Image 1: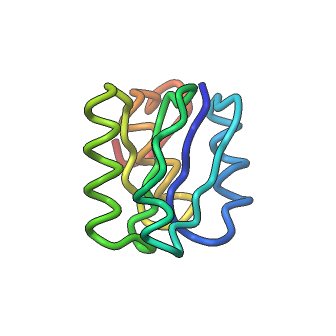
Image 2: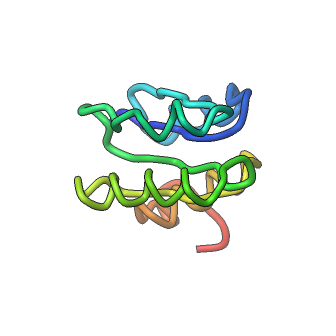
Image 3: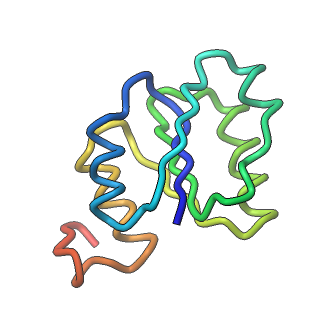
Length: 104
């Protein structure tokens, strides 16, 4: 499954965790320029969207959430920390027991 990560500037550690959790590829939109992100469409091969909420404004979050919901794409909302992304991803995909996630 391909994952789209929206927010933050550097996501190398998050990308590594997502690949460990089974992502076949990761696309990153830094969302630094709101207009550029709001004009993009979620790529067709996307199986999950991860929103790094600490770095997004409300309009961008709303647009991405609406687009993902219309297409039936699971949405993971987390702060920028790797552990937060890991735990929220496990909750959304029911990986708590399989991957040993905490906080589910």
